[in-house]
Amino acid sequence: MHNAPATIPDDQLPDIEVGILSFNRAAETLQTIEILLASEYPPERLQITVIDNASSDGTPQSVRERYGARGRVIELP
Image 1 (spheres, rainbow, N blue to C red):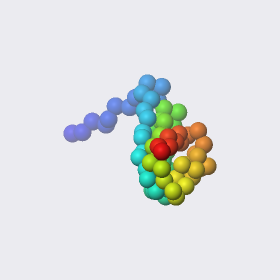
Image 2 (image 1 turned 60 degrees about the vertical axis):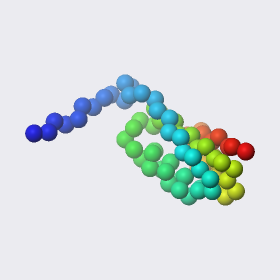
Image 3 (image 1 turned 90 degrees about the vertical axis):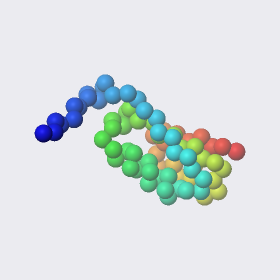
């Protein structure tokens, strides 16, 4: 016999931050962000940060254009 998992009200869930490391992987980075945003975790409790290692394919710009403040970007030199 299996018990259903306990549910926690959204206002009691912790804030979480997910870091995505990227180098010339714009399409994969955008897809990863889409998957995270499609999760059942409350979006107001989820911060997504892309750490970009000097990509030349426009990864940081793509993230900023598509997600604005939802997708924070840190650009490494």
